[in-house]
Length: 266
Image 1 (tube, one colour):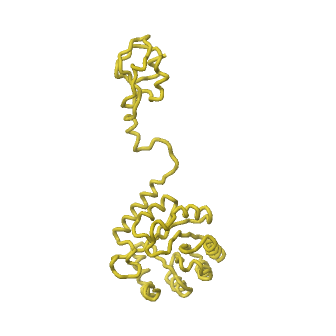
Image 2: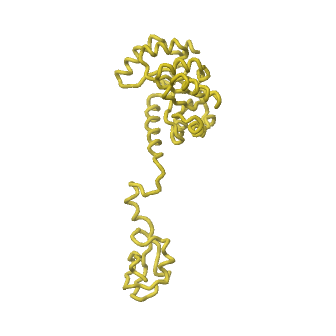
Image 3: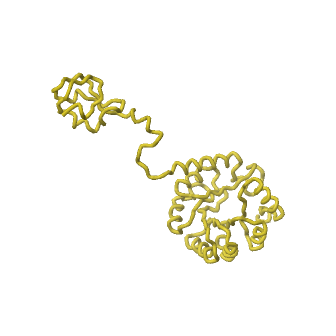
């Protein structure tokens, strides 16, 4: 599988050059130290450790000694093994480290992902945490953003029917565009804890219910329950004040269909 699926070494230099021409950040997943040496010659700005190599602590240490940022995918690794990988990276000098929650099934069913694990990983390991997603659509990846995923990894292909080892569970160009759009929308929607009225709601406040007089009332009359009703628009007192209004004495003549105000009664 690796012989068939690995990126030929001679492709790397033109790929790196092309990516830089287009302003794309490009890096790779080395599977041994010789691959790290190649990527160092090409000026790779970061490194990804694939799930199958998450237990290869000597490789992790070798990568960490480059001083470059690292992303470690954690498929198949238990909490102890994840901690060992983190310790190896930190111990060898890695200062910028992220981890990806991952299920190493190809494809993987959404129900295997247990996305709540992302929250626990953030708390347990204290690192930037993301998701390596092998499901067939974008739903799991977008949902992970709501749980705090800061990185999303997806396999990508120009043609899902192309016959490559990853093609059948990879995103095509339009899918990737949708993932970028929708994950950014989910991120923006997270916002912050805020119970205040939002800018898009400001103009709609007048459509809330409020108290209005539905009968003509003379100065000195006692206001009854039949004189007041909760209706739209929202220019009168809030409906919660109904009990405080009923039984009070009108300060002046009041026309029906007038909003109830505090100065109308005593």
